[in-house]
Image (cartoon, rainbow over all chains, first blue to last red; front, side):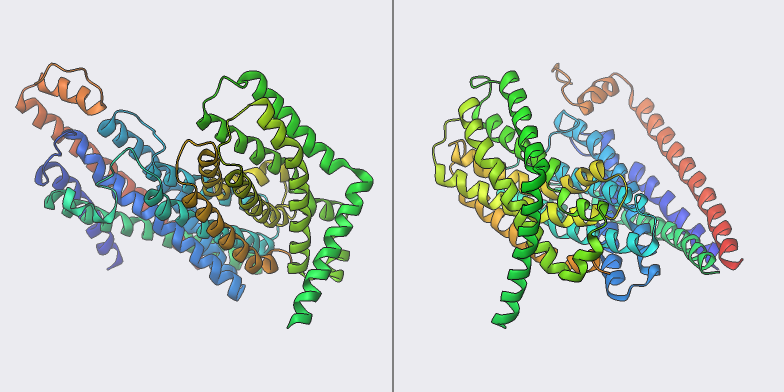
Length: 217
Length: 225
Length: 60
């Protein structure tokens, strides 16, 4: 049964790729480069979701002192780092296609870069501590410090600071700037990639739980 | 209630005073931070000079200077305790929050001392044209509070890990970037580049509030027994 | 196609694309689609293997 679900997920993703090529129209200035969007947007959203989940499990750890919660926080941070790198790179390619240069430090680019730094710092911090409980407390604390500052950059800064680059496609109100079909493919892809990341989370969680119980023996 | 908060503040001040006493004896902290600031400023002045930079750049360079100066010296407060094995003794004397407040006050004091020296020197060597000194002072004050809040809390984190120096900068810089942007914005307003200082000062104040709040909340799991 | 300077990457691609026939463009689209599908099938096989390994680990 489970295998059937996974094969279904594969079929879904392949259908999204096909839809992106055959069903959805091309954007005016980008033509064939439009299709980066079907990967970049979902992965960027997953980055933020993973970040939130990691912070959530960090808070749960501090409340309950349960190392399983810490494992979950760490796994989401690692997956988030992967997603963040992918999002940054594809975003830079998209920026080059759309506005002529790979990197301009506009608010959205700055926030994704900041997230990248935070993820990298979190992972580095974890490698620098040997004791399990210490590592869990300190990285949970860092995760929560980061989670209160990053929203400042993501939400407050674009409103206060003038951005030279209009970013119609990247925020949630971008629907009116995007053709309906493109939006459909983006959302379908998002569902698919989210499922893949969830699957990877389950795999990593199983391995972490195995490691934790081995340690107890 | 008043008695409790007075107890907290007086014990925090004791921690701060103790740190200041050992600082006065050894003088290594203030001297090294001051030297770092001076050398960095000298490099900036040598390479850019008073006429080589527009107001935008002058605003940014001031904060690059202050950021790296802070990163070079503000972590010592906790690292020293762990390295000289006085951490356990300190934990007997005062609770985590009192230690945090005390060490933050000490860090703030150090930073202000260094800035009293370096900022006027910056104004002389880099010669930015300051239109509004009050805005500059307000920016410095608010950003200092935020910088110290983040640095002290992360110092407590890093003191319990390996590879302190690089790790501290790596952890602190992502958290400090919004603060830095707001500080540079406020400085630009003080230099007359942008007309609106209020947005940046409000941003600094709210960041400070959030950072202080979160530090108070997190110091216990970070620095407990 | 306007005779303008290719500023963005899209422009560069557009210029080179305009020099190809519509058939060639569609062909290129299919090639890219097939390649990305193959990559995903590969990723899936890898994830299925990891999945199985992790379940074994958990049981032991």
